[in-house]
Image (cartoon, rainbow, N blue to C red):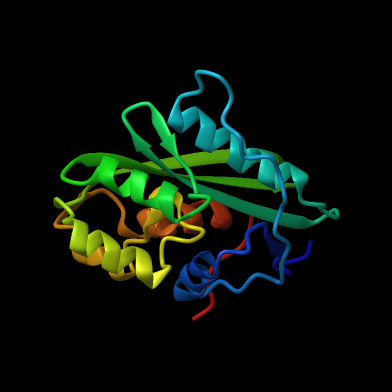
Length: 194
């Protein structure tokens, strides 16, 4: 019987996810980002979309026997509308105008694949953006922090100044719910190092 820790492969290029794993003492053996089509399906609900895309990322990552694949995806939802990563500053502006002064949901899903099968979890948090003035919006867009961010913002970046209230998991809003990730990884024999 071996007590050697399984090899962990993080199927994400997100530096935030890697940073959050390190905060709980977990260092992936390898980072292998998955490249998949993230286009929502017709009439797909945001939570279903997030879970599907996350599992697709995990499945698209090559896995050797004994390896554990961990994938994650974060989706911003305004009602039933899925706000992915904006393609340009105009789309980022449109997303932020839509979210300005409103509450919305941030959904982060985790998928783990190991020799024992597949497991998927998700965490739904609620975020309120204050009303964003045209001047503040111009300032924020000029920072370029919206690039590569679901909903055109990251809570831990300059847009944090627009967020007076959240309900849920701060780390899930960042992109990796560390409580759920730690429990999921522990079920696969991976725990943080002191």
